[in-house]
Length: 328
Image (cartoon, rainbow, N blue to C red):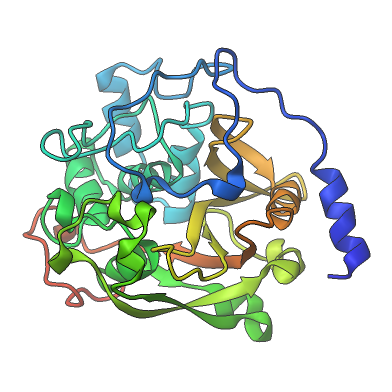
């Protein structure tokens, strides 16, 4: 994209966004990190949404019926339907935990999300063939093996993405859509990384601190709009920033691609400005990200969810790398 084109995108993002009533002043997205990198904390008071989300009016019986209805429909349709129910859900930093220990927040809730738990819960609800499967599926998505804080998939490049790919729940489709415009990028974690304040906030014991170099495919920021209209609805879009040695991740946001009315949107839990789950025009979203200069956004990666075998939600957690790729 030319400099003039980039400036045009920036101008499109200048329209003010009205914060939700009673919400706190927006935190600069340039400093935002996913909840997986936030220190465990009690859930903050919920900001008032513009209107309630689609889950709140449902009785337990209605919710169970909705999850079971058309469970074998194409997974993308399921993800769009389940994620739509979260629209207007308040953004709360790290709203899920283990219910005890380091992070005593509840392991499941529908009244508050951050960018990561919104995607995780949508995946669990969409993959489930019935409500009883949801807790197990969510556990498989959020943890490497056991539902313990130190075994949670805290880091996207080193844990969340590779573990869910190995389990057959995700497939990297970045190069499918971007072809020659996709580039390989890395995130390197060293003992030095774990000396930073943000890394130590994870409170992981030394033996559970990942080190090494992890590779991702990325569409450079200036190339994203070139391919955006071809990306299927329901695809997970992951935002990457430049690799800084003291940051334990390059991934700072994620959401679902939604194609509608001849425009491409990002359905995501937005911390700044909206403070809730919204469908935001992708062009506007990218323009805002292009302005961040303290920790520059470099591009996005794309992942397609896959449906695991029926036994996945009932059998013991498989060893890492033992699961085959699932089906769409």
